[in-house]
Amino acid sequence: MAAHFGRRLRKGAVTTAVAAAAVAALSASQAPDVTTTDGQERQSAADAQATPDPTAADAGATGNSPYYTDLPPLNSPTPVPSTTVGPTTGTGTTSQAGIPATVLDAYQRAAAELTASKPGCNLPWQLLAAIGQVESGQARGGRVTADGTTVSPILGPVLNGVGFAHIKDTDHGAYDGDATYDRAIGPLQFIPSTWAWAGRDGNGDGKADPNNVYDAALAAGHYLCRNGWDLSVEADLKKAILSYNYSQDYLHTVRSWMEFYRRGTHEIPDGSGSLPGNRSDEHDTPMSPSVPVTPSPAPKPSKPGGTTKPSTPATPSKPGTPSTPSTPTPSPTPTPTPTDTVAHIEDAGTATLSARAGDTFADRISARAETSSGKPVAKVRIRFTIVGDTDAAFAGGESHATVVTDAKGVALAPALRAGEKTGDFTVRALLVGRAVTAVDYRATVTARAADALTRTGDTALTCTAGGEFADRVEVKATYKGAAAGKVAATATLLASADATTANDKGPYFKDASGKPVRTLTGLETDANGLLKLPELYADDTTGTFVLRVTTTGGATLTVELTVTAPASSTPTPSDSPSPSQSPAASESPSAS
Image (cartoon, rainbow, N blue to C red; front, top):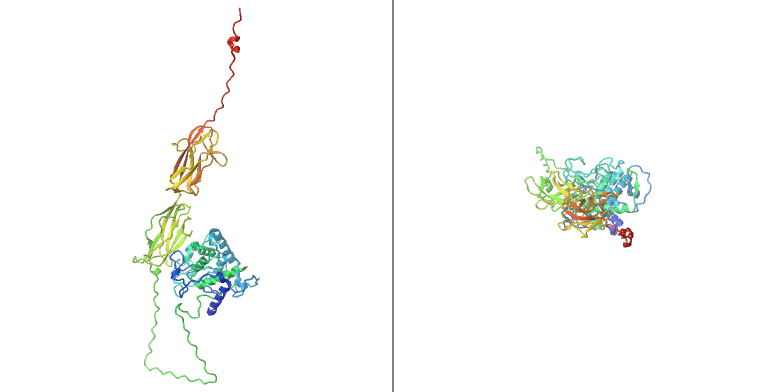
């Protein structure tokens, strides 16, 4: 959250009461279940999961930075035209229900993209709007440029462990300008280490900028839709919101705004939105989350009409006795977190990573976190990110996964599944919360293959010259006995089994224009490993020919084709002359 978002009101017991009333009025029976939490509004250990779901130790999208606690009004958000120019601090329904035009467009475009790419997530744009309101007051009331970039950076407090999370610099200050500690950035308040993998290009300018509301909204959508969550399911919606900022108060505040926007909202000009005034980290007196601060009792007023008793003068100190200077109490040295002790991460014995397209890699990637002396470090987070031109993904279709190291300092990534794109790509392992050298793992996806081909029928394939074969050739491809689907194949017509090049005579296929073709490429078996070839024709050349089908992986099948001559017509025998008409009789000599 920015340090200067309008006026700052002090949060007290009234805010909590209003929050309870708002949640009850707006979400009623639809409110998310409330789980048992500890004193710091973190999910209890019983609910924590090691990976890849968020845990109490996870900093979430924002590093659990402060957020705005202002709640929507309880009356209906009816659109009313406003003549106000510039951001306001009003709390009326009109100003709070309106969302700046560019910001609203960013939320709706992001939700539409997620509907297409992850339809099972069921992401409502009102959830993005609710988070945007709570995190930055809709980009400070819509103070953005035409392309959606904030007029000035929106930066949260320094996450140095003083009142906030302790997250050392992970981006060398590239995003937040701080090379010592991280800070949440942009209208959706991503910390740099989360943006490094969650960042998206939402406005098509070729870069992912956390200060751009289109980029940030799309990134937030993908962040909320990870782990296969379905946001139409209450339990998944709750997990998604808590993964953004781990606080039950945050959950209820976001839900309140989401329900409010669902009841109606409207577009207002950029820069004219209302600015929240109440922030979750504001208290009159700083206090520990677990030790309440007891205020000093107020002095008793004097009785009306009474006389003031003169104070007793202080006894002067003895002359010549120097006063003892007070010794300053040194600030306690903060106890290093497990993350602070990690000197490097290394490969923990990952085998060669290779899989056929569509298959799951047999081996899983593992990384180990160690101190400078080589001791394992448990309970630190390692993020695995897929890098490169590939459609390979971890379980759930994600390109990243965050895993907590075990007692041996090892983080085991989820199973990796190959996509359809073949070639090499990289899986990068990074320590979350501290800049140490990453570990890269090379992975290879090979083409789908078959090791055997068989005909599905045994009918002899014969045809007369100039005719068409009655049966089409169908083959089945298998790999290690199982059907080999989506395997590339080639069919070639040859003069004999020993030939290496396609024949220029004999049987042929036809191309789209009807011309003879004797080699077919780009063929592919279906999901069951079956491939039916097109119709075969014969020219006027008779004899025995060969059809050879080959697949990726080396499977080969040879099929014999026979072309016979057309049956000749039976000739009609000529009439034989009768004996009386024989030349001998007609030419016999006359009587003398």
